[in-house]
Every structure is written in C-alpha cells, then in structure tokens.
Length: 196
Image (tube, rainbow, N blue to C red; front, side, top):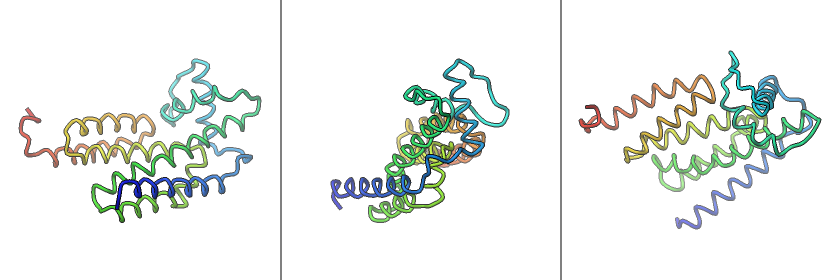
C-alpha cells in the first residue's frame, strides 16, 4: 500500500470517528463530578492557584487552563464544553500514533484495522466527549509504548519523560513506569555500557 493511501485511510478514519464523537456528545448536559472538578481547578489555575488536590493530579487541569482563556462567558457549561472539545480533539489525534504503534507489530492492513478499532470503540468515544483526562492519558500511553519499542536509545529516554507526564496526568501512571522499566532493561540487556 502506498503512503498516500495510508494517509488517506487514516484521515478518513479520523473524520468518521470525529463524526461519531460529535454525534454522541450532548453539550448541554451538566458535567460529571470529575469533569466539574477538572474545570474548576483549571479556572483556579488561571487565577494563580496551583494547590494540589488530594484526590486528583494537576496535569489535565493545567492542560485545560490555557484553552479557557478562549472563552469569555458567565455560563460554567461553556468552560466544560472547552474541556469536552479538547478531549475529542486529543482522542481524534491519537488515531495516528495508534497506527504507528500497531506498525511495530503488524503490517499496514492490520495496523489500519487496529487504528479503526481504536477510533470506533464506543467506550473510548464516550470518554473522549466527557471532558475526562482519559484521552490525554491514553495518548501518552501510546506514545510511551511507541518510544520504548523504538530501536533508538534516545527514544527510550523520551519514553521515560512521557511516563513522567503520564504520572502527572493520573496517579495510576506509576504502574506504566514499572512496566516501562522492565521493557527498557529487556530491550537493552546486550548493551553493557548503558548500565555502568
């Protein structure tokens, strides 16, 4: 398959997935408790308050906060919708890194299928339109796995940086750090200079 065809199929998958996401989201519904908290903290960040919450990390609310400057409204739901749009955009952009990750294991046809499964999975589409932190969390997991599976050692270092970002997005990112460390040592066990 030619590169132009692959790009065409990825754009087609992304557009159809975006259509599904926009069709299923209701922008007039009140947010869930998590989204409510993220948006409130993002507004607080814009006002200079970066105090840490005992329940949630600051990562997603810090990502949201610059985008809230684009909206000047007295209606809280407008700020929630910014988080929803951002989640939908990140989820749609994640389709291409998913294809690149799948290419590490499969040929082109199966990698496009993996991207399609990822793009059209209903639970992921629901999470992306809710304003939750899951879309960026999943994107960073995909990038982390892509970097660690790359043969270039510098990409392996990038994977540890992305795990730090992952942990900043959600506390459960520490589990990925343990798995990433194991993969790193298994991939580089022949390179003795690395461990000295």
